[in-house]
Image 1 (cartoon, rainbow, N blue to C red):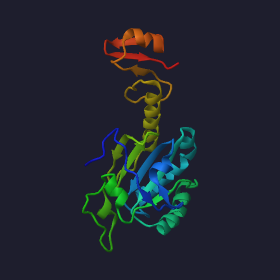
Image 2 (image 1 turned 45 degrees about the horizontal axis):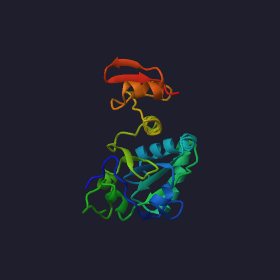
Image 3 (image 1 turned 180 degrees about the vertical axis):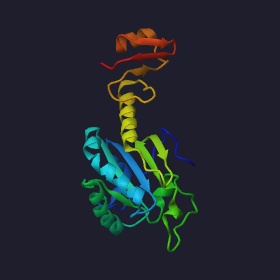
Length: 216
């Protein structure tokens, strides 16, 4: 069964570049982002891990833990880290899961159940392991994105989406297209005008079903 929005994500034990973890315990009361890669020492993935490392202060500011997963082993992860730091100029402060048995990739529906890694494999053998999962403190999946091998992920968009998810969860609102922090939010149609006035103050009724307001 595929992993759906608002479903509790799988719990698992795994070895990482920073030691063993149990996933739900590792998340704790934080938000979390799990981002996956088909193989270590690949060009696009190296730039992506570098982008995540550079954004370290931004994840911390948002109370969010990040963790990578790749289908190589711990020692490969540790060696790869030096390349990532060389490319990005930033320290890799997050763990990378060693998913050599493909357990995590299959639990998160990134590979079919009967998938295996052949001898002499290439990144193409695990090409679909190119996903991002944003997970709430309730351990539920809030957002997922999957990219092809040739297209680097836009972590500025992932950061923007995280801001939107945290804002909507905290304030009971929605966000419009291209929203960024500080811009008007949308009052859900389920909230009456009277309740909206009491909760949000003044609002702009662009359409009967599209009401915008600023967060106090």
